[in-house]
Image (cartoon, rainbow over all chains, first blue to last red; front, side, top):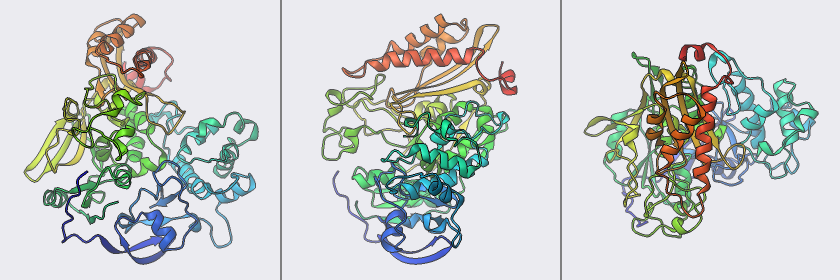
Length: 198
Length: 339
């Protein structure tokens, strides 16, 4: 595509304030900087991982105003004014978030690279389900049908935006179910099928 | 990625004015498609006008029993809204069938309508593509095209529109509202996407610089009994190789009203009007459903390696209509009201 002139009056950098895990950080960024790169390269919050950098793997998942989002497709400049929560902000002092504890207790990982994204996503999945949101595998989405039980099938569908190249899906489903306080994570049920989570 | 300016608009007229002043500017919604295309060099805007802070994030019932959906409503909020789930369940199903939970939280209704094809030749800036570089050629016609168009394509472009949401909105006669520097306007979704012809780079009938402000759904009683079904190459988080949004109102064994739209078969969500004509007034049985599918797919012109889609779509149309006409759907008040 032919290069087009950049209007000289338009600055291509901004000084902005990002609120991350309850703390404000003021930094000057090139507008091309993604939230992912700002977190990792500028704020030294390297818990959030860069996988595909194309919004396809979920390794960079964080919470924006409490909702999960992929930070690789979120421009840092557009995140100003929003509350960013990363994996570093999940624990309260020395007490792990219940989802973190469940992943540890049930080995919801192997290499661990996708784990911060998996955990951030799972925290939101449990909240979305509690809010009554249906999913693509919910049989009847009408509100009068009531909220679907958080079965292993529902967890796999809702977590499908987080890939795990080690294939730790069986344990991930169990960990999400345990943290959500449902029975969906019983090993016999969770072991039935792993491929659907991919 | 090319350097760019960034501004956050706080009102609609201000957003339109910012874009109007700069032909190299783009509106930024959730960014799930635009930012990705900027990384790959397909999009090279000099300025982004962020519209996510505009007061267009409401879903409100209209007086006639329809819904007005603001352009910056996220896919997640659209899918979860009780009135959408109650009146147009296929729209909720379509939105939930697309992307991932993370992307649905970011993506907006306006941006979804304007998302670009995922044709691999379009996103590869090192090769030709008539949509990206008009006149450069279309490698897909003789290349990798197993998920390309079977309806409405041309020699110039065989790419498909990737939206799930748009398929349901098309079935239900949605109308797109927009704002320009010269004032507001409306486009029925049926007229929103331009035929491919020899100008595949011109995708919509929106005037230059127009900002989509919302989508209005008219009342569609049959939509209370509707279904979106998507076929893809894995169980979740993939684009469709074929999809169907359908609504059916059957009384005494006769189809009173039918709405049908197809996804991943054309450059736009494909309203299946030929099928609807066969269905309306006919017996709600397997013979009618097969004849309806055949009537629509008679216009199919598959490529050498995507002929499977014609069979797939026929089976999918018949299956969804059979399901809607049959007794297997979970009983509920809305179903009774729709019959």
